[in-house]
Length: 280
Image (tube, helix red, strand yellow):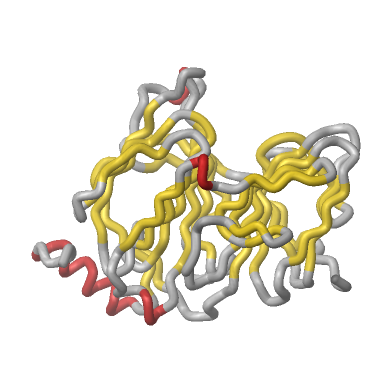
C-alpha cells in the first residue's frame, strides 16, 4: 500500500422528503453527472423524533435498472413486492435487491423495542448489459453477517473482504465493499481499496481522522484515488459505513426510481408503466 487516498469532498447530508412523507438525510442522489459512479443515492432514515410526525413508509413503487440496499440498525422494515416476496428486515439485517428490468415493491418501517427506527438505503447502478436482467434479492440476516474484530477495529462485513473474511453478499456487478466500521479510541486502521474504485465513507457516529483530516458525524466523505485509506481515532470512537466499488463509466439517465442509459429507455419504461406491461 503506497498511495493513501485523500478526502476529495465532504458532503453534509440534506433533509429530503420521500415516499408517504418520510423525512430522510440524503447525501447523494441520482444525477446525470454520475460523480459517485457506481453509487447513485445514499439515504439515512430515522423516526426517533416526534417532529418527524406519524410513522410513514414507502407504499408500492417501481424500480428499474438499479440495486437498492437496505441496512437496518434499529427497528425493522416490512417489505413485499410484485414477485410475491415478503418479509421483515430487522436490526442488523440487509436486503440487497437487484431490480433489473422491473419490480414493484413496498417498504414500511416499524419501530423497535427502543421505539426507534434507524437505517440506511444505498442505490447501486447496474451496467447496461444487466439493466434488463431478471430481478433478484439477497436477503442477509444479522446472524450471517460476519464481524471482524482486531486491535480496536470492529467491522460488520456485508459485501467485500477483510483479512480473508468475506461478506455474504456476492455476484454484484460493481464488486462493492459495504461495511459497518467502528474504531475504539486511539486506534489506527489502514485498509486497501483497489485503485480506480470509487470510495465513500458515511460517518454517522463520533469523530475520526480520515486521511489526516478530522471529521465529525454526520458527513459523507468521498476519497480521491489511491490504493488504501487511513482512519485513526484520538479520544473518541468513530463509526462509519465504508462504501466502495468499480465504476461502470457509462452515461446514465435517472428519472425518479429508474436509472437507465438513454432517454429512450426511460420513455419506454414510462410507456410500459402506463399500458400495464412493466412487470413481465
